[in-house]
Image 1 (tube, one colour):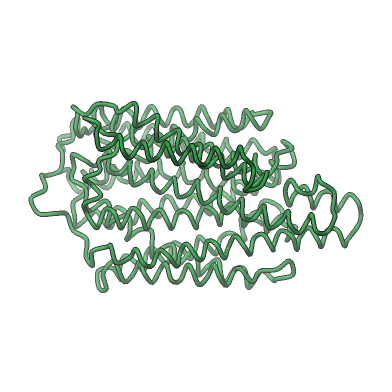
Image 2 (image 1 turned 180 degrees about the vertical axis):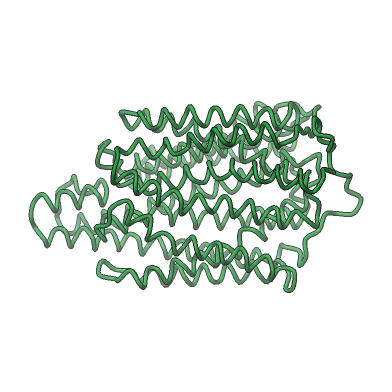
Length: 503
């Protein structure tokens, strides 16, 4: 094993890389209303700004982990950081929705390598005793991107053009390249594992088709043949993937991992948490800007309670798990999340910010109780040989939950919003998004139209929050899968020897 000092320096470098990824996701959430106006983006475009990133991320996490195991994690991390910086520049100077969606997809590819390999390195560098603390620091670094993104992004949106929010990544990427070069040791896993190309193609096809179909359903209705056919095609591809994985000589997904209760329960529960969290981040900035009339910086400040709750919850959970066990803490977190989201469903156009701040804080605490213990349960079940592909699978499931959360909740919100717009007989252009509806209402000088648009959006938001709360509540049943205490199975091999550092 590495010396204690070397391990924590390596963790600092990895945490900085994680910060870049987390910052990128939350910067976009604050910029969505501005993008809707400046790029003339519809609600579907706004969803694809997020989902193009998340789908590529989810589709490539598994091969990224496998390739890092085989050819060297440090090499792939450095290449991914350089790609992340180049894609950030492409996002900043995009002149159309199509260009921005494509650049976001490249960002997703780079992020897939970063996230898959960071978790793999943590698993092999830190043992059972030190890994929970390292994981807590990693989660905290990821969470720091959430308040920093809205605050920095909000200030830049108020003072510069929208593309500047993506340039925030450049100094972080530069430092990350230097830190990884200096402090992160090279490591390998199973170098004999081959790339399962059919598995990669089937997983990518299924994920893209299902999410695209859900977005189309939100635009054209659930009865639209194209939307329904795309969803069915995606499900068929995912079923074919499951069948292929049982027959492939070197499967993309190591199905044996699901024999572990800790891995299965932890991965599923962290996926549910990601579903709720990213769906919430998609809707809240639009609530604060379209309904509350806040600028980008004000929106970032109003997101701080959910982040503060997350950080407090994560720190508290780390102590409670040692006393009560993962099952109790994660179950309590899901119950708290569900209660907070259902309380949020009472939000109306005239609801004060104090009420909103209270329920989003509680939702953040619940997320902090849920995510770190669930991920630690899953990571604790991995052997060093499986750390790359295993962590890739955990991250892929989380990102799938994020993508589906944005797609489903965006669709539910959009449907509820349009139902009220249609019933009020407002212009068709107001159906595209709440930002478009507010702009039309303000230009018309009709205060009644503006009030109708805002009430229509909060109605859609309330329906989406009820849906999210129900998913979180259903997740409580899965808590029974988790072992009471997580530990690495007896007889697991010692951590992999890391090259180039004497580790």
